[in-house]
Image (cartoon, rainbow, N blue to C red; front, side, top):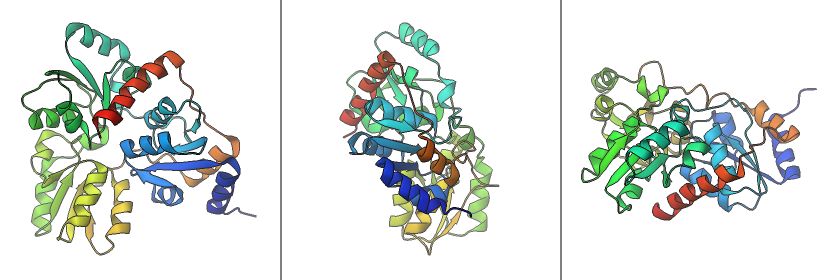
Amino acid sequence: MKINLKDEILRLKKDKQAIILAHYYQRGEVQDIADAVGDSYYLSKVAKECDEKVIVFCGVKFMAESAKILSPEKTVLLPVMDAGCPMAEMADAEGVQVLKDKHPNAKVVCYINSTAEVKALADVCCTSSNAVKIIKNIKEDEIIFLPDKNLGEYIKQQIPEKNVIIWDGFCITHKLVKPEELVKARKLHEGIAIAAHPECEKSVRENADFLGSTGQIIDYVTNHSGNKFLIVTEEGVLHQIRLKNPDKKLYVPGGGMTCTNMKKTYLEDVYNSLLHMEYSIELDEDIRQKAYNSLAMMHELGR
């Protein structure tokens, strides 16, 4: 007899006293069974403050690592162990240390989309929703920002008074979008509003009506009086936008924007994760403590 995965997940969650967190980019079916759905910053906050001792993190590895960094006493499970982030892997600890040695007076700000080893070398972490605020709140004028060059360029535009040294990394999903696709959407759909993520290339950012994080894009569409939108970020976010705005028409560039790593997690993986308590995130304690400081500073400066 075929089991009802949703029912079994809810049963196991209760038995294991677990909480399920899902990023906006996850499959709709996974978002629907989660206790909390959000961006990296929100989910890291929920992971830190929740009473549950078991966290099933439906996202990619750096997110589950962040939860473990903030709550070492909790069991953090990543349902698909090879769900990684190519951008996070573009920044390595050795290269970051070389850059730090070259700019000894600079403060290192790392995007939350980075490995635990890189977070351990940073002064503060940030997300796309709070990066500008955090860097404005840092008194030093020289900033090393990594790993995303596009978000780094966007920050530099917002805070020209700071000397922002940018790492040459990028999101493979956002990089694929071309400005011609935005121009085409405006021609096809009169009055369409374009909301894009700052991880997009400069030529795309310049053609958008709004730039913001996943959560900010959802709010933008929800609060906008228009009814046609081109959503220029990973299309998993459409699920939450549709739940809040069932009558609005949503479009995506070209053939769509899909992060293959974010889409690796299915309901069956969440079920197996709870059933077998897999895959547990384990970190070197010295690295965890150093990385904790950068994440704690994010919550402090991002208030």
